[in-house]
Image (cartoon, rainbow, N blue to C red; front, top):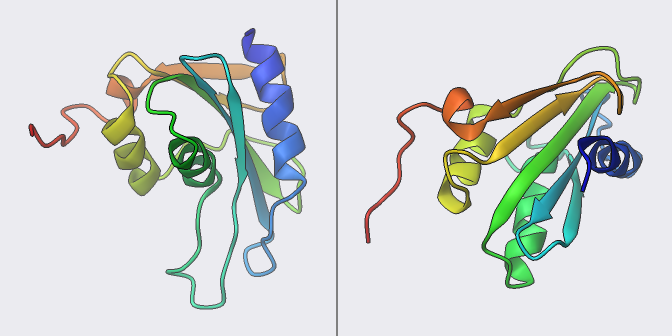
Length: 133
């Protein structure tokens, strides 16, 4: 799947965002190794700590469906749903991605399907923590 296609799916997912407190809407689309795409949006809560990011929503949906292998994720976000800048994943999301993804997993942050930056997970979270079981 082309990066632009995955970004467009993330933009669509952003429309389901529930962000009444921050007014910052985020959408994500993660591509599995089996070729399926799972979407997520940020879902805020008045207690704030119960808020869930778009990236984690997408990956948790995939894992709950039995997916454990991932290729790349596209992330978009902006105040009041208007994308004006890049929305890289927070530290918690980076650690959750490290749990399920290889260091060469691709993270795409985008302003549009034509304007985006591509990172590896290793670039975003060097020396990430993984338990060796």
